[in-house]
Image (cartoon, rainbow, N blue to C red; front, side, top):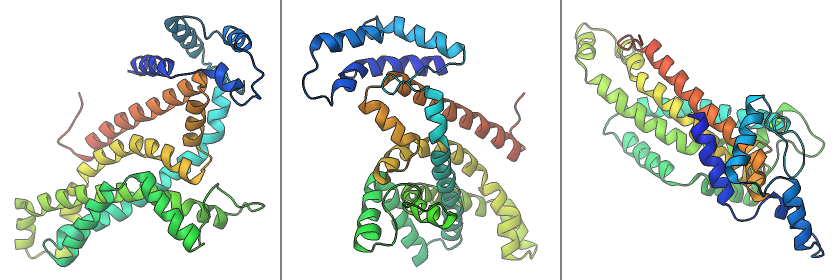
Length: 304
């Protein structure tokens, strides 16, 4: 699967207009000649056939080398390592926030089915799932950074500051922007799952025995209702990663998303391939861990 993904990404990157050689001289004063650009392209091996360049990159990868950036000439893996931390912080915080708030609201909505609160939460969830992530981010920037200057608009730290409180202020808006869609999705899935469980025979049996409603919900219903949510968590990890690319651009968050945008803009194929390989590994590993977790939680599922 990884080989197929890398081949497709390499071919698509090759179809983009321009290349790293043109990007390197794109900001010049106009004195750069076509011959100079062509010579640079030859030196970088960009004139070789696309499959030759792909297998050259694949050969380096099999040796554990992601190559060097075609623009900055820095090792690709070192560039990725510097940006992993901020992206994982943003994604992890957003995922935890989405699970806690979304599942709690979904369960509350299911317990209060057809109430005013249920209708309000349903409407809000549909709105949350309909708004693009970058649009939510721009709205938050407008209201909470420009109109009401409470939170900063870019970076991880203010100039000259490095404390945890300052980090939280910078993290709040991008994390919330990335979480809105996920909260709405977790809320809808957990509500539907909880309603299905609440209508099961064993729930009615537990109630008929005189067990308190709170105990029925927590001990009997909640465990089984959360099983489908595990699959949703695994699906949302790669979605969060793709959403982080847009949010990091909006808030200038110094993570892999910003680096990905830089690689695309500068036509840095080595860096682009390294980032796509890293994201593909995240997707495949998250899907594998989801399957394993699903089998551990649900005793009806066992892998031979």
